[in-house]
Amino acid sequence: MERTMIRTQHLERFYVTGAVKTYALRDISIEIKEGEFVAIMGKSGSGKSTLLHQLGLLDKPTKGSITIDGHDVINISEKERTWFRLHELGYVFQSYNLIPELTAIENVYITAMARNLNREEYEKMAEEILAAVGLEDRMYHYPSELSGGQQQRVSIARALVNKPKILFADEPTANLDSASSEDVINLFKKFNEEIRQTIVMVTHEKDEGEKADRIIWVKDGLVDRDKMQGL
Ligand code: ADP
Ligand code: MG
Image (cartoon, rainbow, N blue to C red):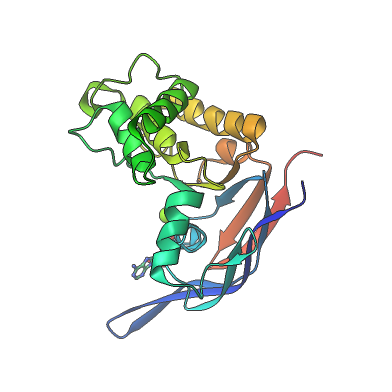
């Protein structure tokens, strides 16, 4: 239970735009355990997305180290980082990023296809995960035939089809009405409880953060507060 899934030490990330240097992250050292559901919260511009991008290997820090399940993921090749993203990590963003020309099931199984499985295997995996997000009767619909909430559930299925070690989500409910937002958060909660899916989710909705096990508050690129919920 106490296995460390993510560890960062002294993470720093600045951006240089013309003559201006902006520190998005100044010095972040955190540890996230396997099976934890962590919310990252803080004001707009505080560094939440930048932090998530570092943890999800979508960007590299200017300083500091990150390990995922004990592996150094900074001092490795781009090819190895890509392997990690494909096999070990899943992502859900504010925009669903579905391919409009593909049906729900095709949008989900292209992620599994990239792992060289045979058609029978990846179709079965896609069907199972779509059923788990409550879309068994929408598998052959195109994105334009689905509501925003349903499209986001397809993107969650796509993120989980390869059974990633960590699911990352950046404001996954920002474009959804309150009922669909609740569905999405309840799905995260379900996967966290039933399969002990490790989840790191950025949100600015307090009630969503409170559904997580723990809230890490970010302010000016630093951890402001780090609080376990309940108890
Ligand atoms: P949040 O997700 O909490 O709203 P971000 O992590 O997106 O915050 O941004 C943190 C800070 O870094 C902000 O001041 C933002 O303007 C800056 N920033 C983010 N991305 C870039 C970029 N690509 N180039 C320059 N500055 C950036
Ligand atoms: Mg953001």
